[in-house]
Amino acid sequence: MAVPDRHAARNSLSPAPCGCPGGGEQPSPGRGDLHLSAVKLAELHSDLKIQEKDELSWKKLKAEGLDEDGEKEAKLRRNLHVIMTKYGMNEKKDSQLVDTNYIKDGTESDTLDDPRLEKLWSKAKTSGKFSDEELDKLWREFKHHKEKIREYNILLETVSRTEDIHKNVINPSEENLVKEEILHNKHRELKEKLRSINQGFERLRKVSHQGYDTTSEFEEPRVIDLWDMAKSANFTEKELESFREELKHFEAKIEKHHHYQKQLEISHQKLKHVEGTGDKDHLNRNKEKYAMLQEKTKELGYKVKKHLQDLSSRISQGLQHNEL
Image (cartoon, rainbow, N blue to C red):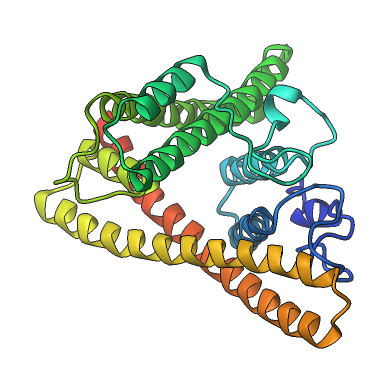
């Protein structure tokens, strides 16, 4: 069975803001059925590009007969399901899973959807332990944690559905044994995500009560997650030190991406303002700048996600080795 083409996801973007992955006309930003902000659209583009690359790699493996158990195909399906659910593109409108970080007007929601997180955030805001800049950083960590929980729930729902189908099979066969192996791999992925969620919550609890440790070498939530997991993996001291250095480069890449995301959002707001003035020259200049920033943000977003994918894969292999 073929993997669902990511073009299905692309085609569901009925014309979206400038340069969106729908591939059609480029109307003014802020219109379209998904109600995504300029930054979120760039993120979607990066996610779809990663999915496309992974599909091409899988097709080559399949042609060489190297995915006989269908594990990589199943993972591709899960990833596409995560992307479509994350951006509200699924036909099945499950409010618990489809709830995105963006409400109808495209602005970021300020809810964390978890009473424990809300309580920690409320305490941190009123504690007096954080500067405005540190509160912004902490808020990013909380939002990142919320996203991890959502992705875990999406994967959990997929696993539960697969298990229900598996239980209804009466006659065991070689094909069903293969599906059992795929289920086992899904459970391992769930276990890794749950471990990361638990570690992340403990970190948030500690930081919320004690404030930031000035000696901490990493600030970006994804990098902190990777470093915590790397220390639990089966790496030698030399490998761990090498990984630490790579994380520093990765964090610098993320900071650069954040910078362009902010510039893109500012440019988006300016463009909306200029559209109402009727000044064509000014509008064209702003459109050019917006298009340039959008392409740069997409490019950096893809590089960040690809790098994250590679680093996570290396840690996953180290953790699996621990379990053997």
